[in-house]
Image (cartoon, rainbow, N blue to C red; front, side):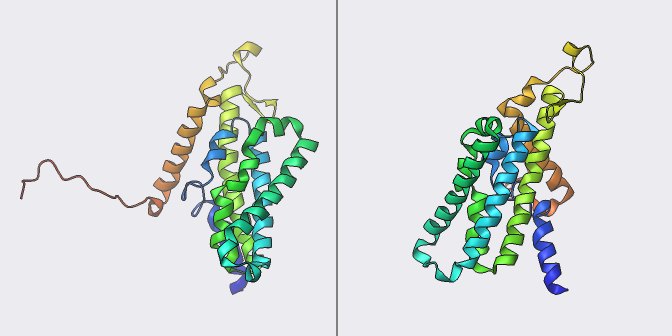
Length: 221
């Protein structure tokens, strides 16, 4: 029972309370760049989940045989090899989405989330728990990308996954697409708003203030 609870915690905690994007601010480059549509966000999420789970499992399996002096090099080689496979798969079977994702699939190799979980957790734990931890973090990342991708596509075009949900004025409907949602600044606004909502619900996620300004009304020393 204790073991199952440990796995469940590793899987569910990164979804909200320990979400790698909203709490640790990891992987935001792709979170901001590939969320203009839901299909690209989902594809990027699936790609990262496959890479992070597989790399965590491989690193954990060979962790006792990796010299500490070259551990980062070995981890990057493992991650890069998996990313190449994913990239080639997308180009072969999902070419249009692969073109829209551009270089961001390749940049999974240097994603702080992937390297962070292999270095800080998989390198020190057995394969099953390492892969469970990686899956939880990957799903937490995917949750943020899915929310942002759905919001930007829906309010930017009135569509979701290519299906028209909000009839636009050009189609004789009532909805005026918000072109700002398809531009880069909207991703910053949405991510900032999401972080604010999560940290308002769970105040313990907010970092302590580094400096507190003195009260203007207080007398001097």
